[in-house]
Image (cartoon, rainbow, N blue to C red):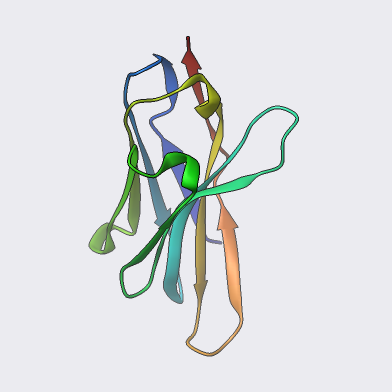
Length: 120
């Protein structure tokens, strides 16, 4: 069973920084994308940032210029460096790993979530 483990959440003041980490283990097939989503109270889960196989990166408009996603392929680990945090960034952050064979079905695996709270 694939395991996805996040770490690095916490409480920070507005303008501060946090770094989230996510490690995937027991991966059988290729990892085709690794990314971060978040869900704030009363809102739907939304994509924050994703690295797709080949190196393409997508960010939500609300975090562009403030957040940076990176990946260590050797460790099956993805990071999210969050700078200039705002109270609106408060949410539970979930790591997502998409794995599968080329041109075959893809499977999404999720971490348990890590709380990020930004105080004003």
